[in-house]
Length: 175
Image (tube, rainbow, N blue to C red; front, side, top):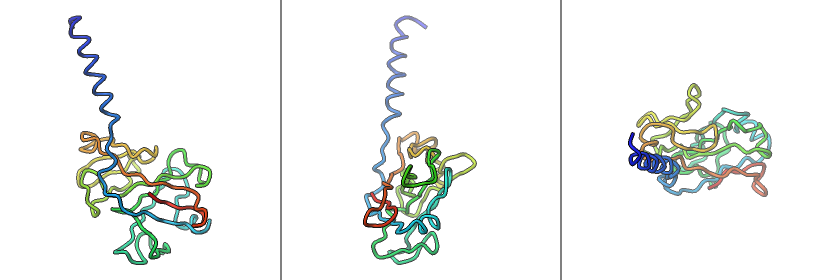
């Protein structure tokens, strides 16, 4: 390699590395999210019990039922655009008040349709879209694209807030 080519190669490498940090997490439309856990018992029944566990919340047609079955959906419950994936990350202690789990919209940002959802792939420690094949980091709580069209386009998962519920109860997931 010539001396004049080395600086160009360094600049090109820097641009590629910088571009990797520009991830679009706004492809999924902003929709209301409100999933309350009124009591510790609700959390133990419907929440995530530890690291590398995940639960999907999908309210069906604005009604009082959905996934997971039996969760106490009400008129105030909202599950975002494609549903909500609650994830016990690798740093999650099992106590959501000490180290909250992560929450992401289930809609694949490449497809950007409410009915095309990601699903946990426990073998590969990621979430995967079965339509476009993109994978996302969910167990490190980043939602960053790992492979497929999402990685090429820089589309990450939309994340939601998980916090102590205050007047709403034990824990609350919101946007």
